[in-house]
View (cartoon, rainbow, N blue to C red):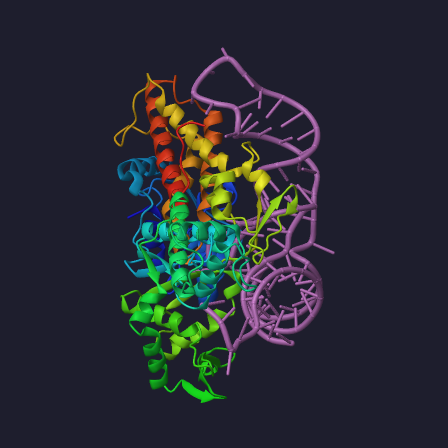
Length: 530
RNA sequence: GCGCCAGUAGCUCAACCGGACAGAGCACCGGCCUUCUAAGCCGGGGGUUCGGGGUUCGAGUCCCCGCUGGCGUACCA
């Protein structure tokens, strides 16, 4: 049992079973190493003065047994605890014993989660919003896995429908040296697509735009897959919409809605009564022209996810799909799958160069692609920048800053800490630290501060998983790097007394494990040298 | 009009599911390299957390009303 649990255990009888006892690290050192507000919460319910109860709690903590230095009541009724160095030494041992597995937990309880992200249309290259979604989605998957969820990552390929035919029409036009139709795709990539598809083929034959569209879409999927691979974003499955149509799944989804009485006819169209299940208004699911709208295949897809045994589906959607959320939730609710779907809206990305926003136009095909972005700033910088901000807030991506290899660029701050760690461990002539090293020489403030934050790795991951906010790891790692740099500046590892040297070496090793594993959760490399 | 997201230092953002004096980075000023990489460290100035109410022992955080900005509001995907 860890320290927090043992502290909690000692207070439980005094505050009762229904008060949550949380231990936080206070902002100020004079408030101790750990602090709880349990007395204030419990006092309110029991009608006793908070400080009085806090005094009782403080007395109930077996300070000597837990090797605590001090227990104190402060402020309106906080109980503050000062932890002895031996405890922090044991944390370093634990990290060294567990290695890269350190920080893993069972917080997710093995719950099956399917995370769908990027899911860009196969009509062209990936843009910067897809880039952001890719970084966030992939890191979220890694974080969820580390926190004990069973996770599968999925890319939904919209390989059916009118956009594919439009792509086909555009390719055919380009092959014949003409401009694509007004509502077609005007990007330069279509010209190259045409060249490849029509290699050894006569462009003047009357081609089927559906067939050419499918071919072109497959090419695009392969390119998307290749660039995502370079971006270190991996999917367990690329799920094709056409698969659903082959199984008649959209029609069956419609039948299920009909059986629930959620379908009616009006004005020659077929409607889903979403307003009865939480949507703002009812929606057309089959047009008066007899065409199903996208809601049906998408609903079928989500039913498919549920049928595969997933308990939760997390969708990362672009800002243009805002409106879609309510109707999908309503449709799932109608079929008994409320609380199945969680939607994260990945907000817009604005590229900034020379202090001004880079203008992008989808119609003219003038978009900065993921491939170009990686070319310009590299994978580590791109992923790190996208993971700095909350998913739900718009992001300014400063290309000049991203290209800059200087201290202004925050990526290097964290990577540099890891580099310094490897630098120390490369040195010869000092005792090689290991999981059995005697750590009793550790006790300097910079050492303790570092360990204190290393210990928070697991709870940070668990919380990032629970809130679906992988960017929490970024702030955490910057904090670790900061503590390490301070330690590095204040103390030498090599060339001091052997016992101190070995103990500090063990701490450095432990910090390296956490930094590398943390960066790995972000999909960012931890370099040996810079 | 309605919905979603946001409004915190000059700029970009934090603040651990309400906690003790709101913190970092950048920018600006000043220090620290004979020794494990100075892409680092130390110090300095900087704030009515958009405004107004409410709940609470306690609110940047929760609720209500405004204001400002972004996005979305199709028998398109």
